[in-house]
Length: 114
Length: 109
Image 1 (cartoon, chains in turn red, purple):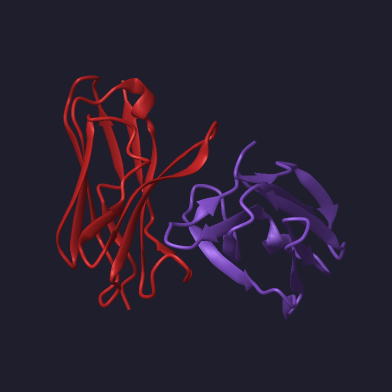
Image 2 (cartoon, one colour):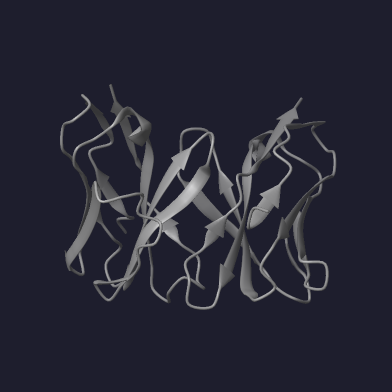
């Protein structure tokens, strides 16, 4: 069975550019999460969706970040404009039974903003 | 105070050793608890849930102390393949999982 799929796996961009990260959750899972991981701050929740509806976006750093989930099998996280401090690994995760269940993580997108 | 705190380590132990990791959480309303494992440059993976009565999975034992807001993970007979970062994870009702920054374990031969 396919796990959570993320693309691209690596992204190098210049400050000010728009970055779009993509995620396909495991089929049948109804909750989707975006996390960001850095050495300094560890894993931080950015936003999570339940049945395609954003439930908690309090972790989204600022207006430069936006996330969408137009259907049950696809989500995007967009950063516009990107800044060097956005450099991190961005993970998407999904689960069937909400946040109380174990999360299945994708392989992550390693973003470097120069 | 951070929501979930762990000793970052690293813990350097020989094969066959027993090692224990501790984690404290700040919100007494937390309801679900987990340990995740993360290998270098990989995604986190669920290792085990932590139940109030304590639970065991092979060489791994997890315990929860709600009164002290404390979670532990014990690894017996350490293997080289246990080398990883272990993340303590806590959930409050209606919110997503909150991750600790992790404890790094290095098992050597």
